[in-house]
Image (cartoon, rainbow, N blue to C red; front, side):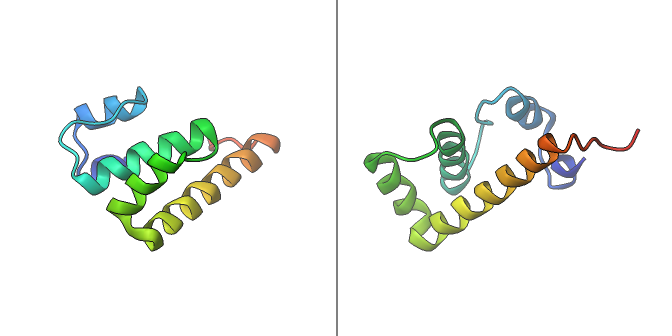
Length: 88
């Protein structure tokens, strides 16, 4: 629901649900998507990936992104450990 409310199309939502990059992203959106996927899969960025992300997002933007990704990853772990499920 939040994705639709934010203006994502059905094609965008399908791509995201499948773990692929939606079409027609801006340079910033594509950088956020790719950087987030890399961080979640590898736990880090290599030097080239870091330079590319910082070049688009800036150092402060990259720091903000890694903070957000880390925060929501931590939340997901806590929900999983305590077996919290959405209400029926």
